[in-house]
Amino acid sequence: ILLLNRPEMSQDKPPFIIFETSMGSFTCELYWDHAPRTCHNFAALAARGYYNGCKFHRVIPGFMVQTGDPTGTGRGGASIYGKAFEDEIHPDLRHTGAGILSMANSGPHTNGSQFFVTLAPTQFLDGKHTIFGRISSGLKTIDMIGKVQTDPHDRPTNDVIINSAGPRPHS
Image (cartoon, rainbow, N blue to C red; front, side, top):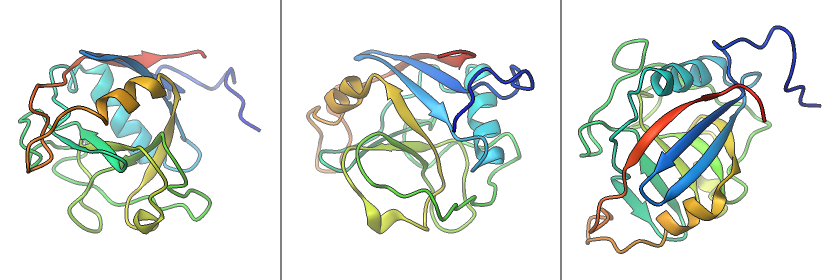
């Protein structure tokens, strides 16, 4: 059972983060019970405006869309804990379909600010990337981003930008 309006739910643990992009909006529901440090990192970065202006720097149709690097290169970004932090792999969470919110990394325990959203089942990522939420609304926006024209390096030929991101305390 998911209880959204618990009295202990404060602004420090917002259940939702809403993103406004150059292609529309989407809302992320966070899995605080399964990945608390990852959710705290994501929510704090969004509340600080860290993601504002970030590009979707990697788009692979039928697989995923990736963002969260303020340099736009796919090699930048840091967590609120410093450069990187440990994985929070939960056995009950799987990359079962479109709309799974997961941390991008370059190996075990290298989480920073970058994240991706799946466009299809990607079970081969299970156990390798921290799942910390799902798209609760705006999956059509994610789908549209996943269909933009890209170059041979999976970078969109026309920038898709996060205009703003921040907490939304209620559904």
